[in-house]
Amino acid sequence: GENVEQHPSTLSVQEGDSAVIKCTYSDSASNYFPWYKQELGKGPQLIIDIRSNVGEKKDQRIAVTLNKTAKHFSLHITETQPEDSAVYFCAPHPPEGTSGSRLTFGEGTQLTVNP
Amino acid sequence: KAGVTQTPRYLIKTRGQQVTLSCSPISGHRSVSWYQQTPGQGLQFLFEYFSETQRNKGNFPGRFSGRQFSNSRSEMNVSTLELGDSALYLCASSWTEDTEAFFGQGTRLTVV
Image 1 (tube, rainbow over the protein chains, first blue to last red):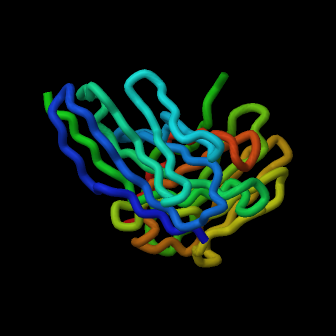
Image 2 (image 1 turned 135 degrees about the vertical axis):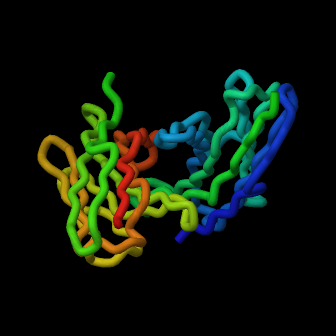
């Protein structure tokens, strides 16, 4: 199965700074790379995802970069705001047909944005 | 469109009892997955159902079971509850295997 490592486990930044979270995976066949944000008392919510045929995707202040050779992908948040404070999870996904909808999540990163 | 709905939101049970949790996926989604979230173990995959068939199962004891109905609604059952079963149980639905998974708000189960 997929082994997933996520770093750092906690990250504290000042409002307006950038934050980067890295996810390393083991299955070279993985081809779908989502990032989820979980706020207190809520379920995880997809914030951005990327497929293996592209190296970077950006959506306003959030971006994801993928390095398939090194088997890692990263979440980048620029101009952080207090409402970005949450736990972030990566969940690299192998190809359709190999595992169903079984997501293997990273351990999570608690991001705190200080005003 | 309506999101994934999980009921109940909170539940307190006694050791040895059993519990049933319910999940209504987004309309049209046929894949429903269940996850257990605890502070120590993070998000752990329980099982996945697709068109009423269990397609995948995680490494949990047989006390954990589930099913899916023809309308894609799913239930999970935990029998002979243990203190360690206290957790947030999350349900996620998706259109296909490798499309976005939408999560419900979860059911917080406390076993005393």
